[in-house]
Image (cartoon, rainbow, N blue to C red):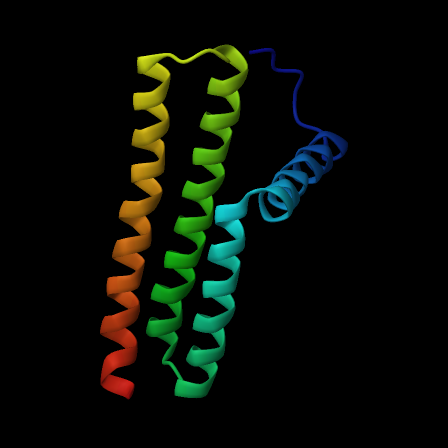
Length: 121
């Protein structure tokens, strides 16, 4: 990896690429649409329930982790499909593992959500 040094312009470019990645995730990845819908519901419920600061911290961390995992999963799937368009057992396993990571985080986030919201009902 070449290191040309730090410049403000290069950092701004890297942020532009990162925001483009977020746009691509939300625009084209169907599973991210589900996460967006659930996020909107959770945020609305959180405002209605009057969550504490620490509860918001947990909610925001869960949302961020699930979206980050979905972005990584989508990246792995796109790269795997590009590298090996034909069926490959190792690619299938890799894609399944990445999808499983998203599911694990989604289930953990749902459990945290239940722990926060059930006592408020």
